[in-house]
Image 1 (cartoon, one colour):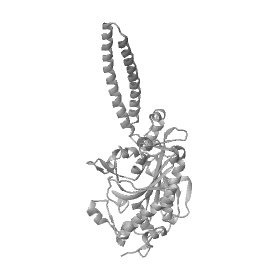
Image 2: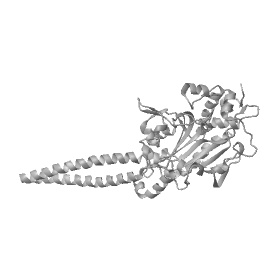
Image 3: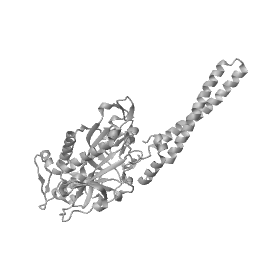
Image 4: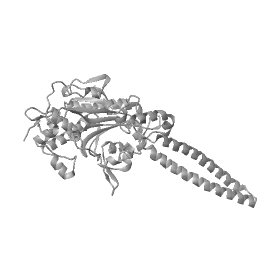
Amino acid sequence: MLPLQTIREETERLRADYRARGADAPLDAVLALDSERRALLAEVEAARAERNRAGKAIGTARDADERARLIEEQRAGAAALDEREARLRDVEAELGRLSLELPNALDPRVQPGGDDEALVVRASGDSGAAESTLDPPVSRLDSDDPPPGEHQPPPHWEIGESLGIVDFERGVKLSGPHFYVLRDDGARLQRALIAWMLDLHRGRGYREVYTPFVVREEMLYGTGQLPKFAETMYHDAEDDLWMVPTAEVPVTNLYRDEILPADALPIHHCAYTPCFRRERMSAGREVRGLKRGHQFDKVEMVRFVEPERSWEALEELLDDALTVVRALGLRYRVLRLAAADTTFAGAMTYDVEVWAPGSREWLEVSSVTNFLDFQARRAGIRYRGTDGRVRHLHTLNGSGLGLPRTLAALLEQGWQPDASVRLPEALHPYLGGLASLTPA
């Protein structure tokens, strides 16, 4: 949520940001309501002062006629005050509702445009080696080509079925399109990835939490999924609980409506949850296999920091995500998203993509975002500085990593000509020493 003062003082900047986002945001309606609210506040305060003055005059009036006249005037003024106060409540409620529909302001470094205007800022060579920082960044369209002479394995859905570790048919039988079943070493590999990722993040200073997989509605307002994305989430109407679309929601709201001491910051959490999204998906290669589903596993990292550390924390968070990718030996690149693809609540977002040589595409496995104080204002998360002042802190999160696409890339990048799949060495201890998957 943006402060009203920011909306008043930086109107044109926000207007430009929303144009760049392609967002139909009710900025003018918010400004009009804010103006009406301030005028009503002045009227209500003046009317209350007049009521107090009239009350004193009635108390000191000695003439009965004068006293009766003053009482009648006070009654008329009280009725008018009640109307103004009722209108003020309505305006404040509508202002609060519409303010929740305003996206965050963009960082000036975020370039205009959509998916095609995303910029590659870092990239690795084959097998995740020889990372380079691209200065200046290059268009994602200019780095889509695979390396020369690269072997092309089958796509991961064929590999998974040939190994007997992915069962798409029975997933659809159980739950419908865009669900699947992992079997035997596929299920074991997924479990190993989750445990290994959590341990890796714990070793880098993250405190692990295990949260509920359903949350109250206000938690989704706090992180910015509501009201905009209600149609993409699963909702249990009877208990009025929502299935989490990402661990970001419960983990960020752990400190909802709290004032944290300064010495508690920074707070770094990691968490595993399944994620549930009911977004509409068409048939075709772009959603085939494990790439997009209504249920998927993800390990998430969330940071709570003092405002002056937030941009430094974003780069650290990105490196935490890349540490996972590097340890898996995956070829990757880092995109800085353009305005139209930056998350509703985000000021700037990096996407980490890994190369899937079988399906010949880049798969996003992590999205790393700085929200500044946008989520903290919506969720009422504050801290008391060493000077005693209470401020909103900054929140950041990033996937560390999303499992389905990571698993897809591992199958394709690890595929061998004998139809086996080589597994990253980091996972061997979590798989009882298993070093490769072989056809049954």
